[in-house]
Amino acid sequence: MKTGSLIREHKGSYLNEAVGQGLAGVGDIDGDRVPDYAVMGPKKNPDDGRVVFYSGKTGKQLFYFRGDDITGAIYSTFGWALRPVGDLDRDGFPDLVVQVYSFPNYSYLLVVSSRPRPLTRDPSRLSLAKGGKQLFHLAAGPAQAGKFYWLLGSMSGVLPGLWLGPHFLPLNPDAYFLHLLAAPNSLIPGSLGLLDKNGRAEIAWTLPPGLPAALSGKVLDHAYLVLDPKTLRLDLASNPVPLLLVK
Image 1: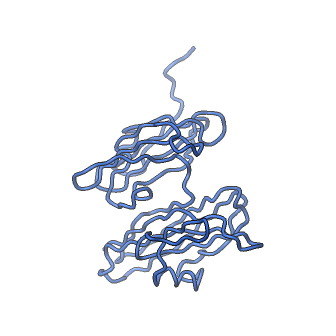
Image 2: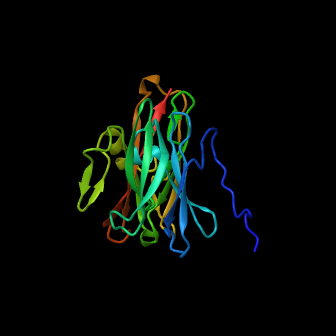
Image 3: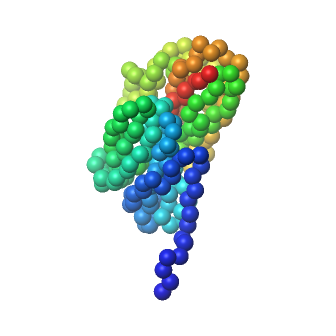
């Protein structure tokens, strides 16, 4: 029997990402009966770290969590250390203790479920001077296939948020929220649409260049709702994702 042969290789995506500083087995999270694993990429500079989950069977990336997706803090090295701790919240997905080194000089621990989050995005910040494009990834799950999604936003944080029956929407109803509500697909093209057969969608929008520098440091939070197309019943409210505006 041959040993020591290379099965697969994972490379970092960013300079100084420090991918592989830590890793953990997380059990079978994609349901193919083969254990999967998580790899840390905390980055050595004060920026957003991430934990990437890979299929143990194929080696393909399943999904990832960025530090600011979890903490809301833009300047954090999420994933400095990582340990599996079993299924603490009994949701059927393994949980992880993740160390966050938060710029400039303190750290803390988070207990995070490996359950995939319904909303992720790239990048986490855009320049007011240069503008740029942001891409939202909606993953509501197969049970939501063919239903309406509606992306909304807030410029005043995620708390106290809105309770819509049994669903909590982590956005505040400020002027930005009301604009996206009253005029879908205008400011953010594709903010209202249909999920595909897998309950997924992608939304791309562009921040125009030359916006006032006074907006630097402002955070735009976004989340989405899923509505049944026949009854307009609210079936899901996603997690929020922040976007930091910088000079």
